[in-house]
Amino acid sequence: MTPAALRVRTAADRLFYERGIHAVGVDLIAAEAGVTKKTIYDRFGSKEQLVVEYLADRDERWRAFLDGRLDAAGPDARARVRAVFDASLAWAGDHNSKGCSMVNAHAEISDPAHPAYPIITGQKAWMLALFTGLAREAAPGDAERLGRSLTLLHEGALVAYGLRVFPDPIGHARDEAEALLDAARAQRP
Amino acid sequence: MTPAALRVRTAADRLFYERGIHAVGVDLIAAEAGVTKKTIYDRFGSKEQLVVEYLADRDERWRAFLDGRLDAAGPDARARVRAVFDASLAWAGDHNSKGCSMVNAHAEISDPAHPAYPIITGQKAWMLALFTGLAREAAPGDAERLGRSLTLLHEGALVAYGLRVFPDPIGHARDEAEALLDAARAQRP
DNA sequence: CCTCCAGTAAACAGATCGGTATAGTCACTG
DNA sequence: CAGTGACTATACCGATCTGTTTACTGGAGG
Image (cartoon, rainbow over the protein chains, first blue to last red):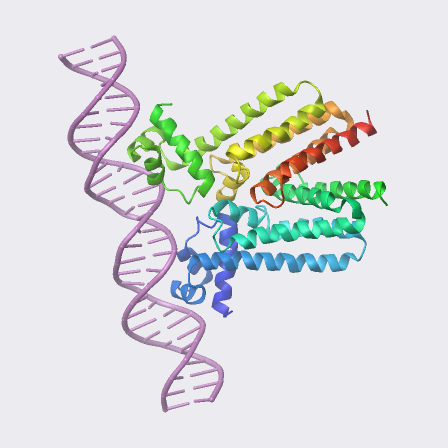
């Protein structure tokens, strides 16, 4: 990726997330990135492709960030679940103050054949698998149910955070997730 | 509201929800409603105002639907919490297959000064107050916490439903909400 | 030295955007 | 019968949309 292309993706990332995909034109992205439209179309081919790379890059950066936090959390399942929510909390303040970019993008993309679709659903499937894996370590017999519950808490917290439904929903979800984990552990330790 | 205006709002409701607000032009709405653009601007004044009335109507219809279900559920707090999730399940299939319209609209509206903003945040505040009220009946000492947890489960379920993260997330959230309620009740009956 | 490539600058295309203007039809109502 | 309000039909406005085109510049590598 050339320096100009990187600047384009960076500008697109901020504008698409803050204002919405359809509300942002390529002229604005070009101006913001200090680049001509020709450069955008030479590097990305179309706005649609730029949207795809915007979401793919968000996804990749979030996964890398979370992986780092999980590594630092050690092997204990309880600490790792806690780490996921703490990572979301840290991430939300810097990059996700309007909620999950995948959920927001999904609101603007109606066609399931859109090339960005698998990125969106892929991240959600990945998060579910992550939570289910963590649940399996803590309560093997109840992993499926527990993993889904953690997923719901997590998604709900991101929405509540973006819409400011009440203060610190991600911290609240983290505490609730821990309680759920402990309850499942108590039933089959 | 005149018959033509009603047709406009009905068409706008479907199109805005299914395709997104910015992706739908007034010409399309006019064509879909069998109406000229002049009628739209005579009745609504602007696209922005039409968006406001689209969201306000959704909000109103959802609250009325839910109120009916709550009345039918009787006085027991457990049954009433169950009724909220069952109502969401019934509502989602018919009108909400792409997730919560308020959350989706929020993804497209960046300016907090937008006239639709209070409608969006108002519905979320109303839902939180509803859940907190129900929680108070079941476990008075823990109502604040429990109400927030039920809210997170509910929001998470709507997102998971819209993105098809796993089958029947609303039913799952309902069962989880019941368990949460029972646990809180057991601590202080 | 020459070619390739990333990039700028700027004009242009056709479509669509939100919104307005003009003219006229129809039904109801005082 | 005159007036009013809801509505259709159609043309138009300037702005903006995604995307293309042409012409040119500067640096890196063989």
